[in-house]
Image (cartoon, rainbow, N blue to C red; front, top):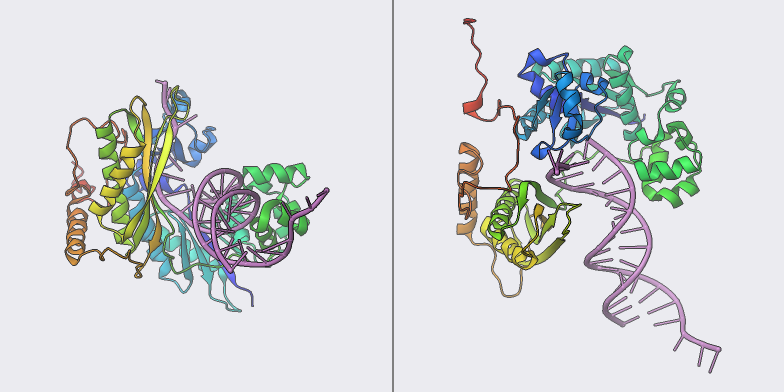
Length: 424
DNA sequence: TCTGGGGTCCTAGGACCC
DNA sequence: TCTGGGGTCCTAGGACCC
C-alpha cells in the first residue's frame, strides 16, 4: 500500500487572518503588506482579480487601490503566528503525522488503510479548521509531496472541487499535468523554467516525461527528484520532527536611511536581542555570528559589507552576542553612507553539546538564570519590556514603518476585541 | 620537454521555497 | 521619493593533507 500525503494550505492566509476580526471585509478586496509597508505580500481573491500581482511595490498600485477601495493592512506577525499555531493544533488532533511546512501550510501523512475514505476525511478536516479557528483551508491529496502540491492548487482554483482534490489513482492525472505550467511545479523556479522552455518543456506533463539524464545534468539532483515525484515515486519524505535550525537570521530594512553609527548600534542591539531570544526559545546555542549592513541597492554611494566572528564557545546569552555583534559593526562601519538595511545571522548552531575553547568556561549558571528571567518577563509583559543598552532616544530612524497594522487581537490583553452585546 | 593521485573540508554563490 | 524577511539544499572551486 502506497503512502498518501495531504497538503493543507490556508487560503490567502494573512488576508484570512485580518478578515477573521473584520468580517465585514469578506467579499471585498484586501491586501497585506511586507515590513515597512513596502510590497504587497498577500491578496484576497478580489484583489487578485483586480490584477494586483504578488510582491508588487505598494506605491505602484496606490491609484488602483484608491479607485477600488482596497483595504490595506500592514503585516501583523503576532496575529498570523498565533492563528497558524491554532490551525496546526487542529491538524495534530487527527490520526495523521504532521509536518509544519510554513506559516500557512502543513503536509500530512495519512494512515495507510485500504478502506480509508480520503475525501471524507479531508472534507471533515477542512470543516473542523473552519469551525475551531475560522480560517478557510484547501486540501490536496496525492502519493508524493510534489503531486500533493498540484492537487492543492486544483482544490483551490477549481470551484467544483470545493476545497478538496485527490490525485491518488486518478485516471485524469496526465490530463491535469498537461494543463499545469512547468514553472507552477513545486521546486521549479524562474531559472530552471528558462532552461526547460529552451528544451521544449512547458508543462508539468512534459517535465514528467523528460529525459532523466539531461535533467540530472541540467537541474542537479533537485530537479531529478521533482521528475521522480511527478512519476509517483516519493523522494521527499515527511519531516515530522522539527530539526535543529542551521541558521537564524534577524534583519530589517530600516524605516528611513541611517547615517549615524549610534543608530546602527541600536538597530544591531535590537536585532541581536531578537535572534538570541529565538535561540533560547528553541533550546539551542550558536557558535558563529555574522553582522551585515548595506546602503540602498541603487544608492549613488553603494556600500555593503559583512563580518563574521567565531565565538569562544556556543552561546545563547544576549549580552555575549551583543558584544560580538558590536565588535563586528565597529569594523564594518564607514561614515558618509546612507544605510538602508542591516542584520545579524547566527550559524554553527548546536543543541546540548559544546566544544569548549581551551581557555574558556561554559556560560555561567547565573547568566542562564538571568536570560530565563528576561524571557519570562518579556513574554508576560510584551517584547522590549526589558531590553539591552538602548538609549531610548525618541528618534529611531531604523524603526519599521507600519502605518496600517491591525491590533494583536489574540496575543495582547489590551488589544483583545470587545463584543458589545447590547447593540448600543 | 618534462611536473601524481586521492581525499576532506570549507566557503561563496546559485536556486528555490513561503 | 517609495521594492520583505527567513530559511534550505546543492555545487564548484580553493586550500590543504598524505
